Length: 332
Image: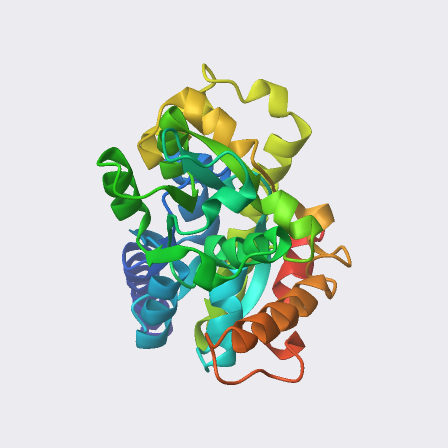
């Protein structure tokens, strides 16, 4: 009788423990930017929370510099971040690892010149006020663009602004041009035109991408959750990339993305078309988690040091890239 009672009590205790575990799901604070991306559809339908078992709090940032500060303070443990602030953060000791590529930036970041500012060609940028989020991928692309134009930072008036500040300054004709991402870029194009894009600058030797970083300790302690998080990212990227024609302004996924970022469905379609999004098969290609990401980070860090943006550059950036998560997430 005692053994039966003990068994019943043990079973009841286990059930209570299980119930407590289920009800006390891990809360994970994840950083993101406010631009359209396929994964925002998975945010809207709850796929990420279902796959990971996490209660996710999404925190929006205006720049990668803000992400670095939040990661360094422990305010977030996973985040989307651009390759430039990623290189800067890794160089200065932020304790995180790149675990996946979110997107390769093409036209989703562009140098837009304001109508009426008198800028018809690159040389016309001399003396003009050009706004950009300092320390961002757009800033890196702007520096690369100026170099390809035969100009330097001293030839233009570079003004550091967040995307919302850029939108406000643009509406008041307070700036002449801006290198920025969507959805602000789409607003600027209503009264301006693209002089160059991140994709064009990349061809000249200044590539940029957005990746996903994970706090090193959190990643080690929550490997399964991180892998499942990346699996969903790969899945939704593949759905978009392999069937882009189905992601129209009238499709539920585009409507969900537009609602999430506060843009029109039409603008969301155009914004998504401005980047490429690696799925599971593409993540481990040589250009990305197969080695290319670390190479890009090193080249970016070298550039940032030469421009006086950071003081220290590592000999090799492979130690800041953990491809094990991407490999596991890509496994069939």
